Amino acid sequence: MHLARFPRVRLAHLPTPLEPLPRLSEALGVELWIKRDDCTGLAGGGNKTRKLEFLLGDAFEQGADTLVTQGAVQSNHVRQTAAAAASHGLKCEIILEERTGSKATDYTRNGNVLLDRLFDASIRTVPGGTDMAAELEITAEAVRKRGGKPYVIPGGGSNPTGALGYVDCAREIVVQADELDMQIDRIVTATGSAGTHAGLVAGLAVMGADIPVLGIGVRAPKDKQEANVLKLAKETAALLGRPDAVTDAMVVADCDYVGAGYGLVDEAVIEALKLAARTDGIVLDPVYTGKAMKGLIALARAGRFENETVVFLHTGGAQGLFGYQGEIEGSL
Ligand SMILES: *Cc1c(COP(=O)(O)O)cnc(C)c1O
Image (cartoon, rainbow, N blue to C red; front, top):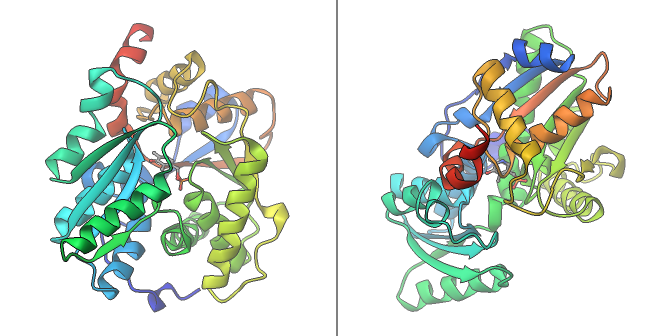
């Protein structure tokens, strides 16, 4: 793999801890560990920071002065991008899609949005269902017209360059497990724009680590999610010089826990937030890690992880929790 071949800007506190979850393990009857990528450090942390290390490396190599990206209103990716830009003297142009339709003040103003503004990002908001790839190009063109040099980061930072961040995370997990003399049977992660899942799969495959990854979907149906992840995992392996390392069977997504849709909270998600908080003091988010934990809990209760040691990748997102006060507080 030799990731030092790729330009990189250090942003994250690494390695993130790999810790046991003793009380949640007992509650679910599974040996459960947690990889704390909620503790990557940048602007409160989260999974996008690892991707941004390689994306910013590429941006600087291309001489960019403005980062351009997009996400849902309460996007954690956008918040971490805005912080990375601020801390490196870059301008940041962001486009927020009203994907969930929520007009609640906490959703539109608090949480990640408040932080985006604190980091002085320029924000443009568009209706749900807008062609966001086209909007990125419109903004990039406007930056060029004013004499700037845009670097366009796709939603979630999910392209092969961004996915290198999760190739590195796969390496980190395997090193930590070896140091602990711990055999990992499965890694469980939320899977959305696919870069996290794809980077893990590509990294594990290139290392020959033979650890299955289960992605719990937060938006797309299973066949679409698996196709997106597989395509990106193969492209990422190719970038690492091992185009044949990833096989179709390595990519597995379970998209039965999306509920009513992306960013929409249901009772089982709130139950997952409460269980993680009240057993091991872990703060999950309602959009990604809460849905992934909802799935993990249901699968554990159905006996799907019997005799396994499972690592739950905590991808962050707690900042978004403050956009959901109205949906959650009545159930606490
Ligand atoms: C973006 C995000 C994810 C999903 O990661 P992808 O690489 O987009 O699939 C999971 N959890 C949190 C908290 C996120 O912000």
